[in-house]
Image (cartoon, rainbow, N blue to C red):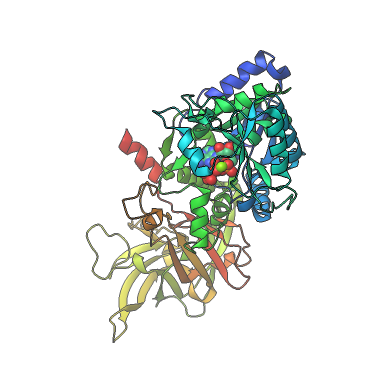
Length: 570
Ligand code: ATP
Ligand code: MG
């Protein structure tokens, strides 16, 4: 990868994180014959989000760094919430992020028969039993953090009885919730996860891959460690909330004396300000139509970020910068935006677009003259050369670039003042035309200095501001979605009593501007193309665009909030 594609992070590259240190140590010591095999194990019950990207970058990243492989495994043991749509989107997103599972694509549901045989083995070893307590009773027997649990009266069932009942569970003899297979560990264990946790439950539900073949489904804790073991994963990297369940992960693998016993290592999950990273809550937003779908450009999903124009390189650079840690913290969204800007600044062609047009007639410019003015495509990358932009007597400028009664320190166009038009001429405002009934300014009349072509004058006159513009006769009509943070609170998960996270939605997160004017060079732009609109920020063509109706999403503004944040916290 060239230096351009992988910019230097603002903080110096940290030394190896604790996970990489551990893996390096294991490789050096010849543990697992020096092999490194990791996995990214999403549950196909929603679209991936930026939090998953952290896990993807870590799992695929370390595998690549240590010459290993990373599996993509669908953790599909929960029939009700899973769907083929999610399976497909997850694969698309991982690939788009730039990672490759090669031939290592797996599904936990492929191991259902193996899991069942392992469960039989546990029963035979006297380490699991069929419990017929109701869900309510099970909760009561479990105890609390301060009170030990109580043994289930079914805990002493014989191996034969357990085998018989478990087989009948599989055959569909019992309704949902009437019994469960539980590990026989210790009901007084200080760690509640170890108080005879459920391993299998009854669910008479069709699974998107195995259909009605099964009516019992393994619990996450049983399926996950065994899937890791079956696939000979060496390092099972997961988020901190699984720390309490590591003893159970190890207990199951020890109890079964499996050939491969992977190590579970936990790291902090990603949280971002102004963002919610929970598939369940994101699904709510989709179902309740607060957003247009999982790929709404305001969503923190990978597909939303893609639609918004965030490049995969920026996500990878961001994940590389935040690194992995052992304590949870909330990252400022400004940092993600910093990496997006940093990448787009180097890569995006510049164009002039007027979002809220104000007509300007240049009275002393010849009526039928059109000049093709030279404009640089990207000052950050001179190799991108220049383009021609047409200039004529009637142009549009931004409404906010003119003020009849300017406040102090307003340096843009005002009556009688001279400003520069980018790549073009100096103009001076001579006259204002207003709508007679509303008083609204509908047109400006200006003069131009023919000597100032290209942005300077022979007498070296200085002007205080440079405006972008578009020639009216040549302008392309486009639509622009000004996307902002989806939530208005830095921590939208924090809710006051009687409210929920949806009350923290930002009512101004999407502003649709339908009558924007763009320079003609944008004609032919296609979905996914990214540009810098001068003075406005970075924008990307939406997939719903049509040839004669271009729609752009604002990826990020030009303002670099992250730099400000850094200065403030110094
Ligand atoms: P959610 O809470 O959004 O539903 P999840 O943890 O249930 O997420 P999974 O599909 O189980 O989603 O996640 C797949 C992997 O991604 C897991 O290993 C999980 O630990 C990791 N992951 C999920 N969210 C984050 C996050 N915010 N930061 C880092 N890793 C995450
Ligand atoms: Mg999960």
